[in-house]
Amino acid sequence: MPGRVLKWGGVAVATLVVGLAATYVIAGATRETLGEPARAELLRDGKAEHFVPTSQGVLNVRLSGPEKGPVVLLVHGGAVGGQGFAAWRKPLADAGFRVVVPDLLGYGYSERPDVPYTREFYTRQLRELLDGLGMTAPVHVIGASLGGAIATAFTAAHPERVASLALMAPSGGGRSDVVAPVLTWPVLGDWIFRVAGPAQVRSMIADAYPPGPARDEMVAWMAEQTRFGGIAEGILNTVRNYDSTWQPDVYQAVGRSGIPVFAAWGTADVVNPYAQSAQVKQWIPRLELFTLPGQGHAITYGQAAAVLERVVPFLRGARS
Image (cartoon, rainbow, N blue to C red; front, side, top):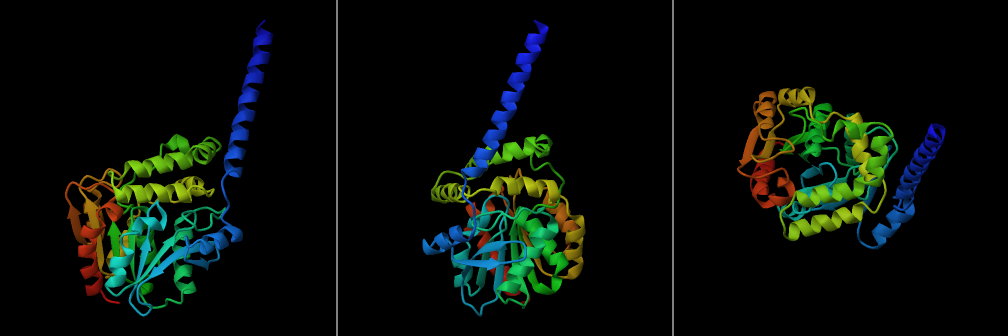
């Protein structure tokens, strides 16, 4: 009898493993691939505007505003893609700026390369994007959440290319677990993020916004970008390869550079808590801090008008 129990237990385990493996494969196969055919269709349908090739993959880019205006490069946070700055494009363009909003590689309509998503992976694509667009003069860089950490790292690596830096509740000022450590384990993490990740990402973003048109637009966008494979896997890739939550070296380098820096932060932020603003200001003593009482993390999308009232004058006052 014990031998029979062990035999059937082994069969059950083998069946479970096969089932999980099949689910993993099916989850990948049922999502669309962002290759040339998909990009051509996105352009034809008017969903995408411009694609810019880089050495690491093809970037989807939104461009608006006068071609000769001072350039503002907007770097989105994790998961949301460039849609996170949807409410910023027209106000900045109307203010005379040339607005550049990419989907970072791994997000939106941009390619999902199979490489480690390190700090250099992100800063390199920004540099090559500007090169590809022929933008050689210093630009204003705005980054939100993870995009704030990336924007700061880009500024530290290429200060000669940055006129000013504006940060929206940025990462990098306090070490934290972006996801539960167990979810980063090999095999287990890969399975969870591929199979359940897209639905979890959509739910997380939906929960971050109060009911209303802005939330509805973001929910629709999340459904659109997650029909393509790789977004949840890209988030896991970033967590494994880029410690974006603690970046004293790049913040200190920016502080020494003399580049004007602005930051907006909600006091009710539970992703990158407001207390981290004090640490960032210690590293960048000249930081201009705009506090939003009672606001959470999603200020880029949910509080765009209030933040832009402070950001536009800051950009105009900074060197270009």
